[in-house]
Length: 184
Image 1 (cartoon, one colour):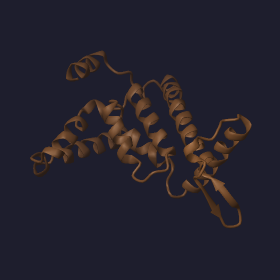
Image 2: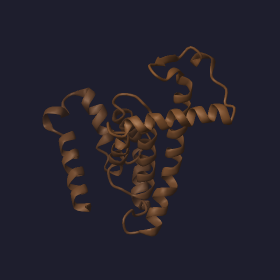
Image 3: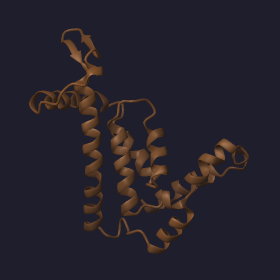
Image 4: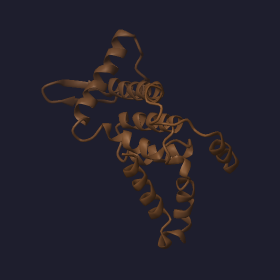
């Protein structure tokens, strides 16, 4: 597994520094921070941050979820492959049940906990044949809540996993952390 991951990382870094793409300024501004090796090597802190970012964006219903997840992972110096892979939790097969559960969570929060509906969402309703009129505020509330809960759950899960199996996700080395801070 580790050899395959390292092979994937090396090929991705090689393709980012391709000679034909190096001379374009817009590409250079994107690849220079992305080519930082600290963003690709798994350690428990960067993996937890990357997984948290990826899980948050996996719960957001929007096209091209991987793009904002990767950009935020680069900006926050998190593990980019884990952020992009975690987005695929909501793939085309799981998207329908996820949307339904988010809607149910939002409606439960609105009715049981008494969370008020924002004024700008009062008119955001649509009619579903056989179901009736549905308001989008429950779905939006459930979408944001599930994203935040999963993002917060990623940190203890990764740290618990690395405590049980310490050889899988090493702690970030002080030397790498010092050189990373100097690069900023």
